[in-house]
Image (cartoon, rainbow, N blue to C red; front, side):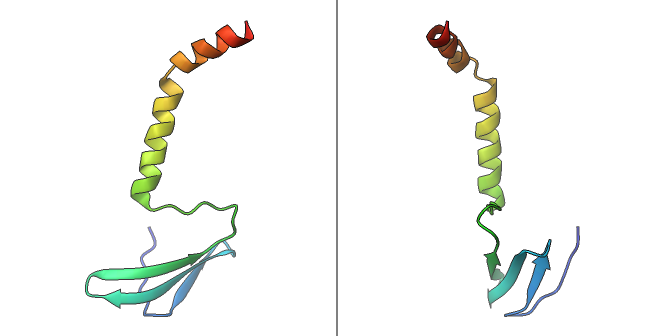
Length: 73
């Protein structure tokens, strides 16, 4: 992990096309802004983990697959 110090209005660039800017600092909270191309998804980590878990559950549920077999013979 790379750890950086940034002040308000300072930014960092990731992979030449993602910019992360410190917008505001209040106590122990930091507000950041992320500019990225539309094709690059940006999620909060807790949301990303929920999506991953939902995808794993859907992939392991074979009842939908059985229903499709009935439709397509």
